Length: 294
Image (tube, rainbow, N blue to C red):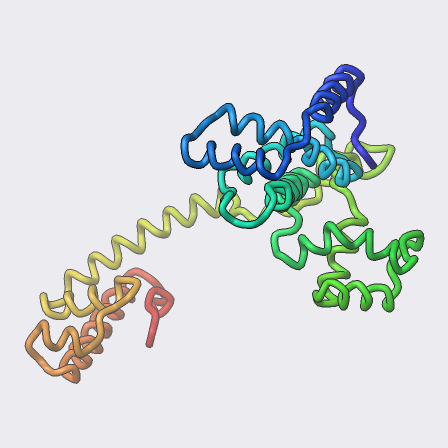
C-alpha cells in the first residue's frame, strides 16, 4: 500500500515537482560545457544548473517506486542524492549523455533506501534477493499470477528462470513479501495480557548459573596454580606453552628452545600431566574434565 502524505507535505512536494518541471532542458553542448566547468574548475553554479535540470528525472524514477509504502518526498530526496553522486563521477569526455549516466545512480540510491526502510528486517542483502524484491510482482503480473494467493509451482519456475535465481530463493522472497512486520508487544489474542515476546525463550544463563560459574572459575584457577607449583621449571614451561594458550607450541619448537629432542619434550609433558592429575585429585573428583587431551 502506498504511503499517503499529510496535506502540507503534499503541497510541498507538488511545489517542488512543478518547479523542477519548469527547468529548461539542456542541449548536448550546454550539458557538456556545464559538466566540464564543474569537473575542471569546480564551478558550483554550473553544478547547480546541471542538477536542477535533471531533477525531473529523479521525480520520474521515484514515481515508479511509490507503491512500496514509503513517502514520495523521501524517495525523491534519495534520488537527488544519487543525482549528486552521478554529477560528482560523470566524465564529460565519454560519449554519453548525463541523463543516461545519472539514471543508474538515481535508481540505485532509491532502491537502496527502499531496502533499508521497507521493513525492520533487512531485505535484499544479496543480488538475487534484490532482483526478486523489485521484480517479483511485475513478473507475477506478466504471467497472470498476481491475483492468486500463493504462487503456483509453474509460476515460481518461470520467475526463477527469468531472473536466473534458484527456486528456493523465489519461495523465500514470496513468503517475505507476503508477510509483514509485527510488534513483539502485540497481544496474542483479543482477550488476555499475553504478548508474543512473553513466549520468547531466554537463552542467557540464570543469575544462579552466573554466580556458580564465577565461583567455580576462581576455584579452578586456584587449584591449577597449586598444581603447577608442583612442577619443575622445565615442566611448567612445557605445560604453559602447550596447554594453557589457544595455539600451543609444537614439540619441535619447544625442543629447540629447551635444547632437547621433541621426544624428550613429549616425555616431560606426559610426566607433568600425571603430576597435575595427582595434584588435582586432592581437590576435585574428575580432574579429566579440566584437561583437553590431544
